[in-house]
Image (cartoon, rainbow, N blue to C red):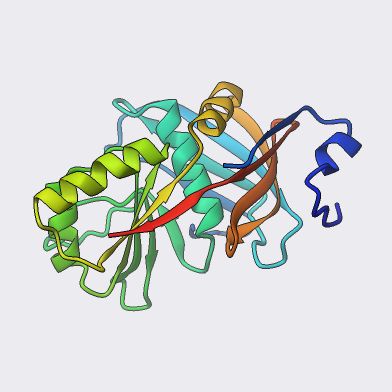
Length: 221
């Protein structure tokens, strides 16, 4: 594929189009990522390809679905993994650190195995965020939400509980895009990353043969 600034490339490929304007550790070319609970109700495998040389995705990525985890949460983690893609990125990794009694949805570890990036997807309590700010002092903290409304609600709670300012970032996605991707999700799916990033905040990908183009919002507390 070549860059298409007009966002019409999906049509040219004969793909259904859904548009809204609004880490992994890899052994060989495979990445296996599972919830820390160890209790799985399903597994979702993604065959990955990419046009972006900065995102040389593994050929196959597997997410485990926890017993109390929704398909929407799997989709949010997949999007976070794609958007935050970098070296030493992992999903659902038990840090095996008694001082950090949490498992991040997406995390980048330094060479000393201390978190450099910590991403929570979907529901996350304010109490947990408060603890993360002190227990992961060197980590960039992000919360990925399905909508701006959910992000605004969390911001209000954070302000009410007087969490530390200038410590947290929020990424608010388009709820229609999340609903569409969740509806397209299969136990075996294909993902082709075309382009995207934070400047500007947008992404273009093909998910199970459907062209998806979306913008998102970046917020700071």
